[in-house]
Length: 318
Ligand code: DON
Image (cartoon, rainbow, N blue to C red; front, top):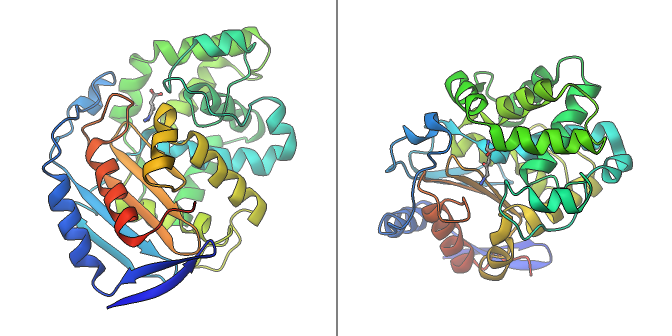
């Protein structure tokens, strides 16, 4: 038995027994063995590679999970969405004078394009763009970390969400490439605050730890025109939710965004902790976690799980 749900003008066949489907998909994903746990941040290299979780949170409030869905992990680049939300609210359209909205086609930590384009990052989802966003937050909030943390706790309705200080420190100690991006932008006049303070905010934000259930709940507003389905609060305007989803569609999976759009067809964001969130407009959020990464820095099993689920339920927005 399936139930028809209208998403983005298309019909989704939501199965009655979603849990059984998720279980099958997770078991299939466990046969994927071609990834490698991130080791360029030493604290991330210590995470066990066999964690695996899949959660679907639908707009009617149901949260269905399989695997390690309540275990918390370093969300890394998924945090770029949280930072961007606050920066968009604070800066409105002037933000787009300092960061573009174009796919980069380059690895997430690439430096070359930033030099050619005179310190203006291609988009807020690559590292340079998220560091620029961190500068906006540090420059415009008296306590930028508290602003992010209280927003995140409210979105997932869990007051104990926190930052893993070991991951934060570990990345600070091995963040030379991100420091290079930040100083290059500073040299072009596109960073206002002290670079070390900006980098500290960026690394801190990447070290937020959450579960797939937390993530799926947090981003439900993006599937619901900016409104949190649980609280009824308008988190962003409908227009900003559309814009964030557009950026996730074109840039959220880095230089694999085109392939993700082609094979899955959902706005999505990954992190090198192995998490991925995918937004299904008017339906809900899928969150997956498995630490081993493919060569683009995206979770190999997470990609397989989301692709499989999206294809079976007909979730593509295209
Ligand atoms: O800046 C870094 O390298 C990490 N803190 C975040 C990178 C990341 O998650 C890229 N994701 N796939």
